[in-house]
Length: 503
Image 1 (cartoon, rainbow, N blue to C red):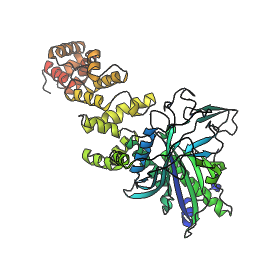
Image 2: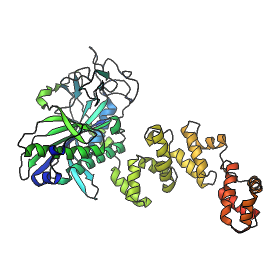
Image 3: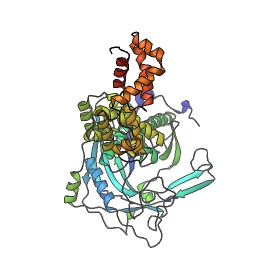
Image 4: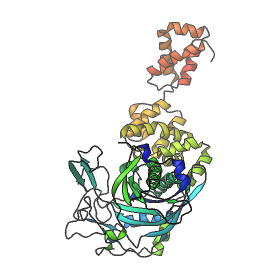
């Protein structure tokens, strides 16, 4: 399905008449060991309905208990967003029909969130920043997962069967809600993407979530309305749900600006509704959007209020790291690398791995080369993030040291790393067990050189005749004979010496 261009207004025409107002709601699954209100494991990708219990299945008589680690993570998020941390707050029940929430209500925070009134200074591509004000960050539980079979789109429309997996039901969530973002003008889509990007980087730096948008551990709902330039009253908003990539956030906002403007220009009204984002680059209508009254919030009777002490808040404040983009600017200057190289490292998710490898003793050049190329390739082959590979920055630093010490060539080092990834042990052990150390014994190399020259008399004659570049073929033969373990530079020296030629 595609959307006819006639249904959209040209972007420049939109900006000539309308002022966009945005609001971003980002849901972040916390990477705690267990769920929000029970002891079930919080683990992605396991067999359906294997991490469930009476509490997260909503069985009669079961009682929730708050996850302390999740509360501390929520406080740290609030502090990193320059929020005020509430000294006292309660959970509430949010009621409406949840086919994927067995209690048929969600435990959330309504009028007493854990963190309020913050801001995030978002870096933009041109080097400027845009302050996004934060309304609130509150705790809640995630729903289960619905899988619809038999429809062309994977949605419920046209499906013949719907399957429920409750492993995700009860996973701790923090929802971060901005205040209205006004004045962005034509840069609204860019600012939306930049905000979600900065938030993702911040949360990753806090180590509270893996923020995998492709796996749903970070999801963005983009609210947008238009008002005539000069007007003060907000227009009717739509909420594009569960946008799952940074680029898609930008595309969804831009599309909604053009679609809403076309509706208004045609004399129609915007419907307050949720909308689905399609990866083809358009949105489609979902359900009419509820108001807070529709959810019939009331205090959760089975949970005590949350009352973090001043001492706890200050202790957690001390754990807030340097903002990721400021850290990257400092690192980039220290390493002397270009914006493009830094962008590649960030996009591949390896900047923290490179930094840790440098801290373990490797040069920045070597650390960047291994993580940014070979190990990213291995991660792609396995379909995982580089950080999920079974190798640590410290182990990569050991491999770099072995290369620097001349004990391994780069080719042999790749084999060592492959051995570590295969679970064969530490780099030194893999090198020893596989017999991968560089051959330093000249007598061994000389024997291989003599054999290669004897097998290639025509090439030997060319070398003796002054065609030094012909030595490459003999060097290659020696390297093959020694399984790549000879020092190629030393091999070349011995080949030329054997032919009576100076290098």
